[in-house]
Structures are given as C-alpha cells and as structure tokens.
Image 1 (tube, rainbow, N blue to C red):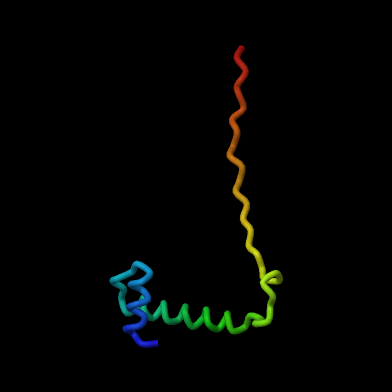
Image 2 (image 1 turned 90 degrees about the vertical axis):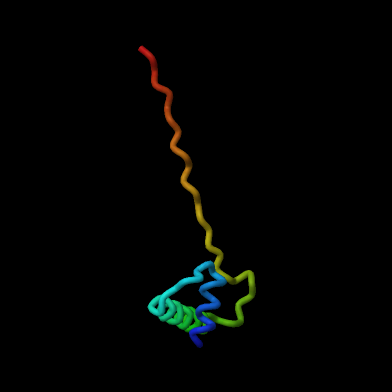
Length: 68
C-alpha cells in the first residue's frame, strides 16, 4: 500500500499527523488483519458466526449500617 493511502486512512481515523514509524505499524497491522481474515471460512451462514457477548458487573450495593 502506498504511503499516501496510509496517510489518508490515518487521517480518516482522526490521526492527521502520524510519523513514518506509525505508518509502518499501520501497514503491518492491515496486512496482519487481511491474513487473518483470509483464514476465516467464507461459507458460514450468519447464524453460525461467533457472537461476542459481554456482561457488566453489578454495581456494589452498600449495606445499611445498623445504629447502636
């Protein structure tokens, strides 16, 4: 990928000023993401895809202190 394309992608993500080092990191991460995506099965039905779920912790409830 050309440097100008990487700069445009970074700017679109809200990073208008990035160094060459960061552009290299961006290019490596994009290549890695493509490589991982290519390893995924292409024939999965939407109902077979992994669904990530997260649970929020319940807020700590303060117990009322008994008065003497």
